[in-house]
Length: 204
Image 1 (cartoon, helix red, strand yellow):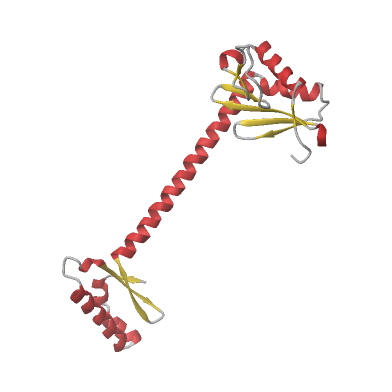
Image 2 (image 1 turned 180 degrees about the horizontal axis):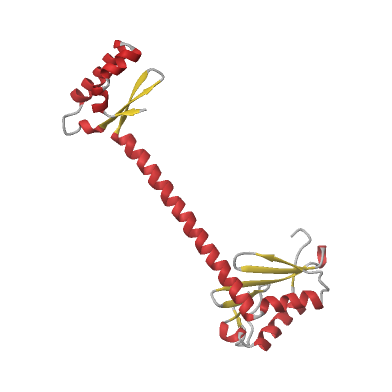
């Protein structure tokens, strides 16, 4: 229970009835000490008189501000988490849109169905898909990332390719929307990635 100083004044008789005159005198003493220690302009720093296990505890405005700061921090953290989750969902929805809109999702499913006889599998993340097949030392994968409207195939580090399409930086082959809109070009890149997949170690 929390009482303001005014409440303490009003309830001295109530305290005396329940806990005896000694506790009422403690409350009065606390009030006097507060007024003696703080001037009238600062008396508001004594915010509440809390009764707990028969003992009096003074809660100051500093402690109340600390609690308020913690509440504000928790609210900010909750908002940050909500914003992060909203961004994550937005990225996931965008990746889904590009994979389906480009036809790449269906192309990879067709490769698994027709060439691998369903022995492959897909590991899906927010903006990435790992298309895997094989076991142990024969395990292979095609790594696809979506960045904005771009489709990126991750390869092992290599020398930059001379061709302008797809865009090569020595690690990724990137197809812009204008590039992957050409279904023949996208299928050709997927076939190259299937013919020369990234090998995985048996510990992966």
